Length: 247
Image (cartoon, rainbow, N blue to C red; front, side):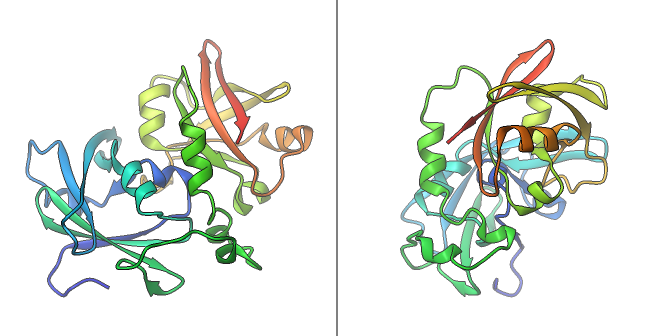
């Protein structure tokens, strides 16, 4: 998938939050010179269009982790990256990366990607649960949000084991200093008491916190179904409160 000798990694888009933050493996972090705060990202070998992507450093118990941050969502949206896609990300130099896009086992990098309902027909894997979300998410985030927020979708695994996952960068930016576990309140048409935990055994590219106890009651009480999509907004920190708005 990558040229021999290149430094690269691959990631499958199986969580809404990877559309906004993407964790870089430690060996990739070592390829980036100290002091670099923004990198250029291009689609495949075409360097006629590049995207400026901010690097976000997050401190964890196992050391600092580096993420693609602001600007990554622009690359994702303008290149129609979808749920289930696998991205092969190769280091060109210490401040430049190229991204190859694979879908359904075939490379799509050189093609114009059109997201259609066909890509999710007759599939019940998590990877297919959000294949048509690009436009919906883009429209949702354009709405005014006075508070910190993130998109979330109840894919199959989050329904089967009722959970709301929160990415590490978002958790660090908004929930640092809270205890583990911590009581939080989830609001849709009514308010549900829940418990948030640090996900100690997570891979840091996925999630830093999760809300579990109380989510099952919310799902049943609010009629949340497979594929339901929400903007989750932090509306209070005293007590911690998350407002869920469908989109």
